Structure formats: structure tokens, C-alpha cells
Length: 570
Image 1 (cartoon, rainbow, N blue to C red):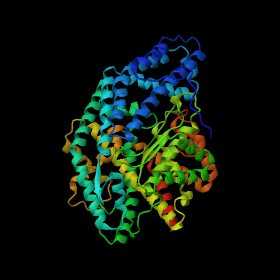
Image 2: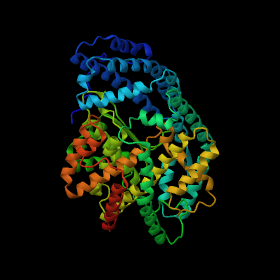
Image 3: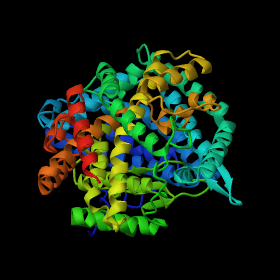
């Protein structure tokens, strides 16, 4: 695929942003521009989209570089400069642009197009929520939330004479040697304990600031504010509570049975905390690759088998150096695909250490990347700004659709089946965690003045509610109360997590369809991705051949389907 970045028409081709004064004239131009026809309004929107795309990508690169090396003070300062000196200055002008659009006499004409209707709906929400006094608060929240990455990026333990990252350390918890697992687990616990108080205080500060943002905007709590801010037009907080209950009723029992079977094989009555990731039969952990180049090459071969276009997307990322895959000291934890609306080609960041989990992450982020490429030709950057329920559908579906081709990493059929089984079990196993994290956030922001001890107690109760009760935490009770601190989303992107659960159900539906007609499922998948956010979420799901449905009935049906598939893998 011969890929080229978008051509600029509004900003100079060689434009570089060094200070607010560089970009301010372009906002002023848009604010003062007369709009005398529908065509002029559409042209104005394209110019604004170009400006938005530039600013979003400028911030993106600052964030990407900072997360690759959290120890580099210059990179951190570059990111901080944007969110403290540039973003607060264009926020009120952005609001002026929103109001100019909503006051246009030609608005009703373009709203007839569903894509513009969805975009304008979001603009109206942003206008309703905008408060001058929240600009500085949002900037402070953005700046402070990034401390999570630097704190976690600095965490290492000593192993065999060298310092290793937490990602590498966690991979050792899959080793058959229980003495080694116990040693590594205790080292991880001791290292994380050093940052427990700091992360508690950081989260408390973030909660206080977010609550004030909500109060300023006229809401009783940050949860209600954030639901509107996220544009959750298709479901409510009550639906989230039903989702939690559905997980309890139809997913948790299956997970408990899976764990009981593992305990029987292990010959134990309860897991120790260092037992939960190990293969119960004592098999060594899967080693699908040794470095980032091998991980990428294997994923390229898999994508080529699914659809040549998918392979070409990864080829473009490699050619453009839009990949940073391997774990290293000082690198922020986790993985992401960052859309770059001007370049058109996103950036994939992850922390690979050679595990099967890394293969899943690479395929997952690759699904996001394909989504970015396939929706790149949509007219406005706002049409590509995806709700998470749609974005995660793309990535999670790719995980499942790719499974039949995992022989590229596992030429031994026994290993391939083992990898497939582990993945399906992990899908079921992660759903209670998703429900727990989401339920925790509801509690946190409904009770914003809670103490740290209150928070730990609330998390402990949720751990009982969404846990299987099959792990013996004797001697590590304090660890249970703070396991939430590992979840980046709580610090950096509040309330962005239940989408994983909703999208996972959709992905299972797409995979179920692929069992009947694989080629049609791929076509439906691509057609859905091409829509970006130009249709409603239910319509996008419908285009993918599934329903936007996370009811107990649908969840139970899909859980039964996965259970049957697990029985077939022998």
C-alpha cells in the first residue's frame, strides 16, 4: 500500500508549532469567517477539521515520545507544555467555534446527513458541558494523570543479576517452578508496595479535581458528567449495573469451574497468588517469539492470510517507523494504538517480552491500526474519532478472527490449540475484572469524599463479589486491597473500561458468525470499520452482522458458545 499523509489546504505545508502565537491566527480566521451557504459551511468544517487533526497529532507525538522514555525530562516537558500552555488557550476558542457552528443558518441542511448529525450531537454536548473555570482544572488533571506512567515505568525488580521490568517479571509467573514464581511474586509485591501510598494520593487528587469539574458543569458527581462527556447516547448507568449483574450470573460460574478444574490438575484446594497464571500440567509457558521483529513478522503473515489489505497496513507502519514494541526500562507500561489523523497511519506502542499475551496485544493493536487506515478517507477527523465501543470491537474481533492462523507462531498444533484455549479462557476471565473495575469507578465517583481506607474496603468487597474465592491470599491481604492500582485507565482515562466488555460481546458475535461463513464475516467486519463514526453505534454493530446487545440473554448465549468451543479444543 503506497500511503501518503493528508495534504494541507488551510495550514501551511511546512507549519511548525512552537508556541500558542503560532496557531492562534488560524483559530481567529475560523471564528471571523463569514458563512453564507451550505457549501461554505462544509468548507469551513473541512478547514476546522484540518486544524483539529494537526493539533491532535502534535499532542499525540509528544505523548508517544514521552511514554517511550519516561525518564527523559525534555520529552516530558514538551508534553506538559502542550497541555499547560497551548491546550488551555485554544479550549475557549474551540468553544467559540462550536457555538458558531450551532448558530449557523445552514446547520439543519447538513444535519440531514447522519454522519454530520452524529458529529453535531457531540458538538452540542461539548457546548453544554463547557465551563471556562474547567479549562485550568482539565489541564491540571491531564498533567497529573501522566504521573501514573512515570511511576510505573520506573518499577523494576532484580532477577539473575539484572533489573527487569514488571512486564518481564510478570511473564515469569507462568514458569512451572513454584519456588521461582513465589520469589518473583514477592519481589513484585515489595516493589509495588513502595509506590502504593504515592498512587493512593495521586488517585485521591485526581478524584477531587474531577469532582470539581463535574460540580462546575452542574452535575452532582463526575460519573454523570463523564457519561455525557463520553457521548454515551446508546446506554445508561443502569445498563452498566445490569452488565455487572449479568457477568455475576452467567460468566463468573463458568470462570469458577475453569479454575476448579485447574486446581484439580494442580492437586491443590486453592491457588496461591503466584499460581493463577501457570499451566496446571506443568508445561513451560509458550514462547512464540524472541524479539519485536519476530512478533511483527508473525503478525504480518497472519494478517496476510486474513486479508492482504490488513498485511499492507502493518507494512506501512513498519516503513514509517510507527512501531515501538519491546519492553525496556523507563518505558511506560501497557500498549496502545494512537490514531494520527494527519499522517493517517497510527502508532503502535507496547511492551513485548516474548509471551503469548504479547501476541494477543500485537494483534489487538493491529486491529485498531487497520481501523485507522480503513476509515482514513472519511471527510472530517471527527468522523474518525471513534467511540470506544466501536474502536474495541475492531481490535477484539481481530484477536478472535486471527486464531485459525496462529500456526504462524505455533507450528506445533498442540501449542496452537493450547494458545487458543488460553485465549478463550482469558476472555471469560477478564470479563469479571472489567465489571469490577467499572463498578469500582461508579462507587469512587458517587462517593468522592471517601478516605483511602474506605476505598480499599470498597475494592475488597468488589473483589469478593467478582472473584471466584479460589485464591488463598493469606499473608498478602493488603495486596488485594490495592490491585486496582495496576489499571492505567483509572488514572488516565476514567470510565473508559466497560467498553472492553461491551465490545468483547460484539467480537464474540462476529467470531460466532465466522464459524458459519468466515469470508462473509470478514467482509462485514471491514464494512463496519469503514464507517468510522459516521453511523450510530447500533448501526455499526448491525453492519458488522451483530446486535449492540449486552443483555443477560445475549451474554449467556455467547458464554455457552465459548464454553462449547473450549470443549472442542482437545
